Image (cartoon, rainbow over all chains, first blue to last red; front, side, top):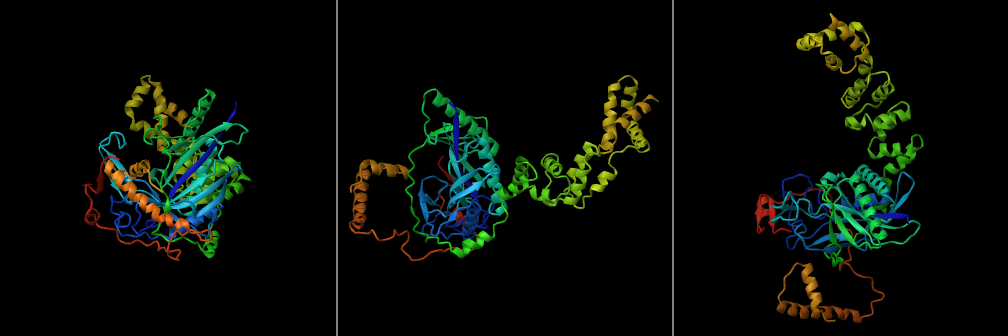
Length: 463
Length: 93
């Protein structure tokens, strides 16, 4: 039988507000532990939460980008569980009246993924488990808690189970990440925990529309790792069904510090969060004026730019440029389109230069001349494109050093600087020629014509 | 509507509370009495009444995204039963 995967995602992103969701403590990643806390986020008795107006606006803006309906009336709920990262004993979240519902998000390949909801909540504190090995929960003898993160505004985005492959899930995540970054509502950096996601995976016979028991994959620390985890889980479920078994509902926790370790499993308990409307907060009724003003603030979104660029490039190249944040530079760099795109995605990408620091015209000149200058010189020039006042001319003008008169003094200099190697060479160790060639290339930043350097060296070493 | 012993134990476990048999008994009858009192409302015909999530007729209370000073470390840890460096210390979770 052929099997088809059914994949859904839950994504959490930290909003890039100045202050927390329900108090005005400053948000600062890496600040001294517990230095950004107050009676509200430490849950002292008698304190009251006050929602952050900017966080609400950011969520509505995201709702527009996900083509959601922004509801007329939204309510915060308390979600109860007991754990030291949650000082109140409940998280303020949203339950049956989330702020944004019924959206969809188009991918570069033309497929659409349904967005069930996008709601606003607060993040929990950061726990550090001590005494076990390497911060793991198992074997810890105490837990240390830093409440700086407690109360950080968090948006949870839930998709429909519309994704059909690990690759599609990865591309969805990349495009969503780029979208929230460009909206300016989140840094969405996985290594800082400002973008996190869980994946729900089930399979079914191809052509069927049933939904079978799903498993949930948690704690994945990169999109590539997620794609691998999904693949592994699909294979595991196929194995179970094909040997006559049943998939059990469970959660697979990955160890972000050790990607090759098998995931820890936990049975899903019937969840009992005892949701109730948060009595400390009044309902949220986003005015239509605000909702429409924010709709007007939407920039051209990455998905739309991919569609536009795909007309002149292929979809993969267009998607790569946009999700890596290089497409605006691409549009400014003159030259043959496909050549510019390829250089930006390959050699130039490898330099790590910030696209915003680049003079597009100068980069265009360099790319145009790439076949006329030595590879090493081209690489060196690309690395310099982010420097202020970068001019391609300098690298093109002293492109390849072809003149014997220019190279001769350099060759002599290299030989004079390495007398013992010269003696060895003359004594029969002719393999040293490569060493001398290397030295000359180093002197010239890779721009010397290697054939000419060889000839000159052989000649001089004979003497 | 009486609360069963199992329901008391379930809620206690969710709240990480260890209860003695005597406490389970006492809390069970107290919770039953509370539910019964609230249950009075069910006797009314409320078909036309919108569910209330808040008693005040008020919406959209929020604050600008402008920071205010947080507490000093001394104040933060003033009520903490246990501390290690600048962390709160709790039993292994």
